[in-house]
Length: 248
Image (cartoon, rainbow, N blue to C red; front, top):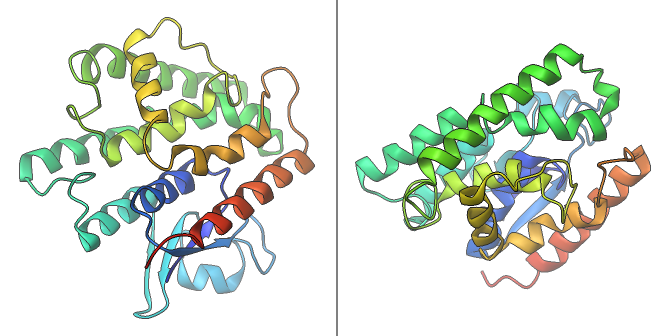
């Protein structure tokens, strides 16, 4: 089985896990702590020797020795390898539209974590007000683009079927919903609201987002490290147990 290094609370890790759960492909989730120099951390020499960028998620294939980092690259690789053309179509133009959004995502939709999640869940990062406010502006621009362009005429970002573009976007946007961290009010965005509801029905959603249900509402009271660790462990155990039920 392939190995995925990471923790369930990581937005990028959840995107990769969602693809695997959606297709019920057996894998091993290796609990890897971001920023840690411990043996199971991303700053440990052994991890950096495999993945020089020192980030999660990371994919490792024990059979071939193939190593790959960056969530979008991993999602594309998996879809290419296993021909999951429903999530990543073969048509050049259809695929280009998905790639278009995945590239756009990094400095817009992905800012959700820096703007809202990190200030409450990771005060240890020491983010300045300037950084947080810039992230909020970029995220708001991304939301407006989703609301008034991508989702204005389509059910999903690249058409009427969900793709890895939607999964990548949802793990950032969806984490802020009231049923999870409750960090953003989506009421002014009806198209996004409808899209969020549709995405919750996508196979694998509940399993990979259980970690957020365990963390709960952090809008008023920031979680302590024990809360974050506890949510990660519960999410990890749930995911690991569910993988055992996948057919090879």
